[in-house]
Amino acid sequence: MPVHLKVTTVLAFLATGSFQSVLASSNGLTQPAISNCLTQFFNAFLTHTRDYISLPTTPQALQDSMRQFYNVAQFLSVIGVVNCTHVALRPPRADEASYRNRKVFHSMNMQVVCNAQGEILDVCARYPGSTHDAYIVQHCGLHRRATQGHFNGAWCLGYRGYPQRVWLMTPIVHPHTAAEEEYNRCHRATRSIIERTFGQLKNCFRCLDHSGGQLLYRPEKVAQIFVACCMLHSLAVRKHQPLPDPPQQQLQQPPDGDDDDFTPQHRAEHSASQEGFNARHRLIQTHFL
Ligand SMILES: *[C@@H]1O[C@H](CO)[C@@H](O)[C@H](O)[C@H]1NC(C)=O
Image (cartoon, rainbow, N blue to C red; front, side):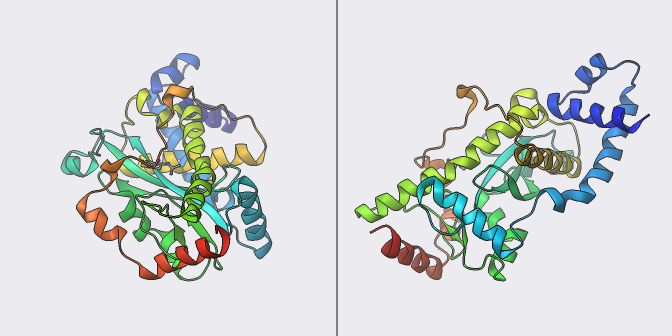
């Protein structure tokens, strides 16, 4: 099979999530042939992940990224926005329960960081759907790099389900002052890009969308599919390709108000770092008064 045919076959699969529709639109490919294409494509493409998905590596790139975020809502020193999204899959039989998420379908919980343009800078695609966002963020490569000082004093923004850290700014759950309100407002406005990115990602790559059914693959394969889609998404953003937003009703509700994200275990993690609270307090005192 020529390479261009393999590539277009894989793209058709990612865009629809179904072998059936790829089969219907191609002539003479068997299911094993398509499956083979996927394997070959991922083996080749995923060796280039770093070329598509990486945090700013030079001081100049970091500056640019922070400036673009600053232009959104005057929030200082933002390197990226972090959030998680669920990708439905048929769970491995031996470990069914850990893949059942709080929305009661089976999934993997994928963590993504994006920049102000919606380019994807970091992905953690390892955890089953029952894993809490707050757990993932404290056990991922991002956390390791941030605490090793790779962020140079910049931070990520995350919703209030995340633990406040020096490198991870979260909203104030009960704002008391005008400055805190203002901080929350800018935080929310800056963060909204991640919601849009997830919407575009799942709209473009229907294989990731729950409405398209579940991916019938092993978790390792689902992780590969997700990372490949993120790489293609980043490529599209860089090349200024139009990325249609999903129809409005499909968007997840972004407001801060949903309390079902607070389990007891989670509250404990949430109250972890005094240093983190101090950093947020300093930021508010110096920039939101
Ligand atoms: C991030 O994800 C959580 C939980 O799924 C959600 O409640 C939150 O609103 C999301 N969006 C943003 C913009 O942080």
